[in-house]
Length: 395
Ligand code: NAD
Ligand code: MG
Image 1 (cartoon, helix red, strand yellow):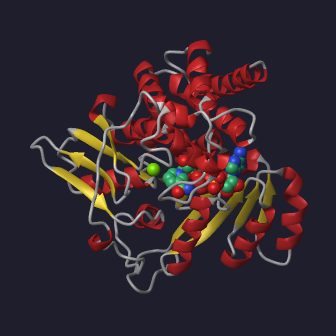
Image 2 (spheres, rainbow, N blue to C red):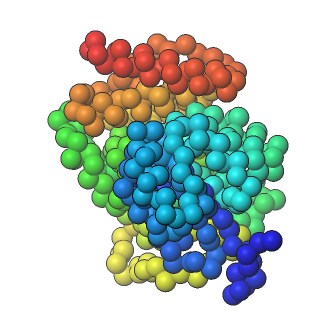
Image 3 (cartoon, protein in one colour):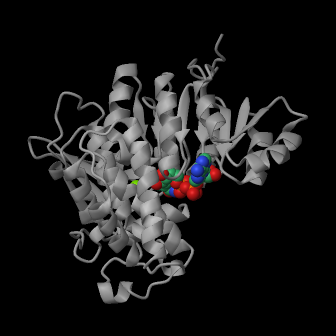
């Protein structure tokens, strides 16, 4: 028997949030807190932040929580023992809880390659995917989309640009996309040259003009790798060729992306830069849920501007196009090198411009596989990470 939403008789959706303690996870819980008649939290997972996971579990009373860091198991287990909440630890548990028959939708809010296995398991068990973890699509877009098609599982985008594209094609199912206009804020270093980038600090890179996000994606936004990852994500989500995706720098982040159709008409989705709207749309689709979030006023944005991306300075975007054109395991190589390089930058081990240089070198050096299986991709990720660590240690 399913619990009913008395207001509109739709069943309550039971949500699993993989990565509930992060930026997207916390914002998703804000959405759920505001709509208790529509959603119930079934599973929460975190990597190491036991304190916040416990706090979230006490508030939302999920069926199950998983802490990936096994050394934190006892802390979480003891805190939740008086409650009817199951506690597991470790990567394997995080993946296998995706099989729970009581989950309707899995929100993938983990950062990085770690999102791939839980997402694939959730698809295998027929769960609707609300996809925030773009790295999953970058490293294994072909396998993930094929598997979702076979299982008839919808993958609903959470990334604001992809949500905008999706919102622009709802009702246009029979009209092919001619072109995607993927907007980019340009990040904190928009308009700067390589000389400027040589000396930027971690604090400079983490100071995003429009969005407050996790550290990894914030650095990706500063290098424009985030836009590169999003080009690849868009290719797989919307089944278009890379040359059909044009990146448009739009520093105000009001137009979240656009779609051009065969008659030249362009549709866009606009709003304030606030991730709670795309998160909510992915959870509520096909319905729009009433919400009193702050509204966009054009009086606050008298000028909306657009520019071409500077791929000579921000080479990561060019590397991403190169990776997707080459195909095979190349996007997976690029992603692994980027994850290691960004982590090294955040630990003050390398300079900002070493990030694109490291990725370019790894894309030259790593073993190319034209038609990778899932195992090939897992191996590529492990090998490239090690190769990148060795390369940076010997630099
Ligand atoms: P974050 O660093 O704030 O949070 C990451 C979450 O994943 C945390 O809950 C953490 O505990 C968990 N996690 C990290 N590594 C893990 C591991 N190895 N195993 C298990 N759990 C792990 O990241 P975020 O900014 O919320 O981003 C999450 C994803 O959403 C990323 O793929 C990002 O690109 C995408 N995204 C984020 C935003 C945003 O506004 N933050 C916007 C669009 C897309
Ligand atoms: Mg985005």
